[in-house]
Image (cartoon, rainbow, N blue to C red; front, side, top):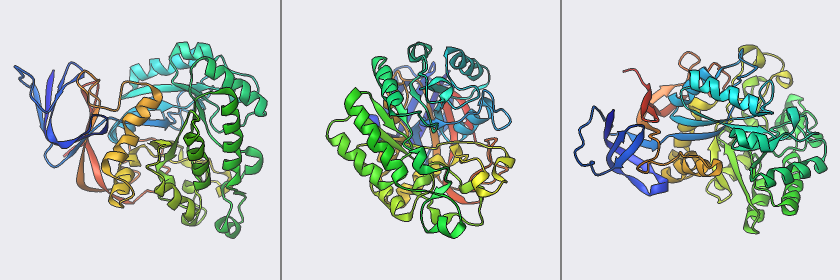
Length: 426
């Protein structure tokens, strides 16, 4: 099927395209951008006048909850939530039940994605067996099965010697280690940032040092092993400064920030609302401002959702006992566009963090509109105002502090491999 999309404002940072023009899709791939191919006769035309057209977004931190936690969400529900937000590639983290510990779990996710999924799903494998932090996983077999990296997520390592051995194994397999910097001894089972709000609410706080200490020890081991490490979900400006210095000195590192860390602080937590319970915690306003200021830093290669859908009961316990995480796929692009409106960054730079930069980190064919590339793209009307409600969310998880907020800019069409997988109803 030949599809043409006319009069769209195409923003494709990798190819330096930022103009109103047309795009042509044929046989699951991009046929051309701009000039009409010779002899072209479209089977379907879409007029996108007044709308942006972006490469399909790439989210490197998505919990799909399948296998093992289907009471929270499924691959079918969360990949549909993804495409409704313009996301065409998601990365499944290994903290499923069972953990993504062997090729069997990778194959299961791939099979279920092929059967019920709506977008591309990539997998990060477990760094240690069952994420218990003591025995190394079979990284060679995981790589053969197609994982894009390895991680222990937020599960603690037994000690730094195990982490060093894991780094050496990952380096030998040319695998990126996705590292969540948190010293669990310093964190002490805390649930909020250590500061005024924690004191006022009587909750155990997680100090900034829990992140910076973990970053420091990890950097020392990177220098020793040479492994390629991506630091996940930075929440403090001090950690950012440390990583920038290490990057300047030649360390093979990169990092990401979750979108909610750029909008919410510990001062926003009110009435012990469990929807504000996240890990790493919402930090102080100084950290929020610092992260916003450094969003265009060379070290940052992704703005991610850190999507963690939960059933209603998971957020109804006392704050410290609620399960951490936000259902965030459907707010990733609206929050990104708000950063442009707030003049934190430019449209081209923020789309880079949502498309080709995370795709390059994962080494996947995504994130740009080059001819011959898979036709993964989304159309977003920046003038549409809409309110996020539990009723209009496509994710099974309704746990978000942005519930009932009004956003400007909405995805109207999403294509995955040339197939229209999402379209707003008029």
